[in-house]
Length: 188
Image (cartoon, rainbow, N blue to C red; front, side, top):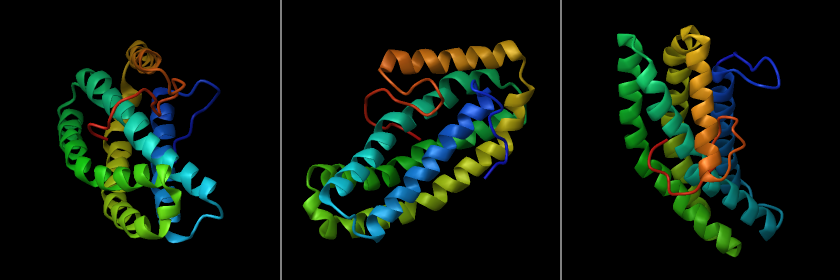
């Protein structure tokens, strides 16, 4: 994981993206935990499953749009563009793996009594998705974040403003880089 941290109450562009990466890692860990140990109550099961499904269907797509619609057009360095193009392809490749996790979590959220029946599907999906997603996040942090830090302050602020507007238009996410909004996941 990258050691960069937000410096203040208004995180930088990289800080906000790192916040989102942290939440992605947390959701992957929660999915593994949900599949590994029986939650104490059905309410705990429901809450965890809802949180995972909501994050990967609502927040993650906002992060993807941030990258593809706000960041990609502003990075002109050939190395950065090549990395972004590769990562955009990975976004598409993650779709099947994400759906394999989202579907049993959505079922479990509405039927928490089915935990023992669905835990293997959640475990298998999380195990398949996690290494791809962790590598993807590390590549972004290593290959793209230094380019973002070199953008002019006005450009970084424009990206942040677009991120905020995207979240406000979609009804959520708090404008802190992690997402919100509604709709199915189209790419991570």
